[in-house]
Image (cartoon, rainbow, N blue to C red):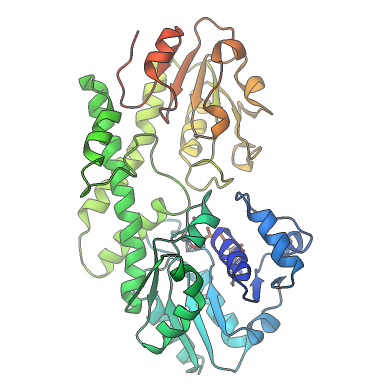
Length: 430
Ligand SMILES: NC(=O)c1ccc[n+]([C@@H]2O[C@H](COP(=O)([O-])OP(=O)(O)OC[C@H]3O[C@@H](n4cnc5c(N)ncnc54)[C@H](O)[C@@H]3O)[C@@H](O)[C@H]2O)c1
């Protein structure tokens, strides 16, 4: 496995747990050092124990030594990052190409390379071309996009809805089917297609899910104005089996390491093929605008931002992960601080480097310390520990306001407790 991030480390560890011998490589020496001393560089529930178990059994090895790792491996998974380029929607494939070159340099033998990283249509073709230029015709390239979700990654790996394999040569399907057989036996759908087809399935899936979230978020805006409860709309729509109830929960904008970059990456692929993916473009625009919708609402709730004490509960893009990539808090907190508010935050995964240099933003060690003096509490991430807070006990301010971006609490219950409570797309009961 090349790259020991959320995908490479989880997949590598789970493949080892299925009985394979796995070597995980990363260019980041500190990550490998941590892993070799038994510390996981990422927070993912259940991962530490699984790493320890498979490391102890000798099935899981961590190294920086490409030559040793590549020469010993039959299947080589590329799991490196594929972020957007800084100034465009284009996908930065430099890590993928670098990994492919490292593989070519490390062995003369025949190997199968599998891209697990999310890569735009035609990337497999480009890797093949690059390897041919290096006079390497005995390295096959297959696409096997990964669909696991952070926070549920181990379960998702073990019980995937589908395993997608894309190759232009049928012989590869048999090899990959053998690797994935234990998961297929448990009910995973093994789906084969062309290499380009597999590459596009991943982008299409993420863009569709992002569209569902954005759709319900826009309807939440309408519900707030029309005095309707968005949860009734989600339930009423979602029980139609053609629509489905998942990803229809109104909340903050979508964030994280995948949806923002993959929607943009898909648009950029469309542009390259001269196809206008107008729906996806609208989704990106609406989602970007959503961050402003929330800060405007905060301004309205507080009257003014100047001098107000705002406490964030959770700052990661979702619970059960320490991943901050494209979290909505990264836009909201700096904006609030810049406009005169004093922001504190507590996150179960600790202090975040992203906020260290922001004036008027401080990390607090627990929920109580964070909320005790607040004028407004913002429920940003739905960690379990934020689901049953006694707000009156932790904050004696009679004018305390609560803005629940995840609709974690019942509006009638909050009203009965005489709490000044705001949520997303639900009527306010006074
Ligand atoms: N994070 C997710 O939930 C998720 C889910 C599905 C798919 N994906 C896709 O999987 C890919 C990886 O995502 P991630 O979140 O694991 O990324 P990540 O940034 O957490 O990890 C990438 C790792 O690759 C290493 N790396 C980069 N170049 C290298 C090289 N040449 N040699 C060795 N190591 C190298 C980095 O040091 C880093 O540790 C991306 O394409 C992403 O879109 C991510």
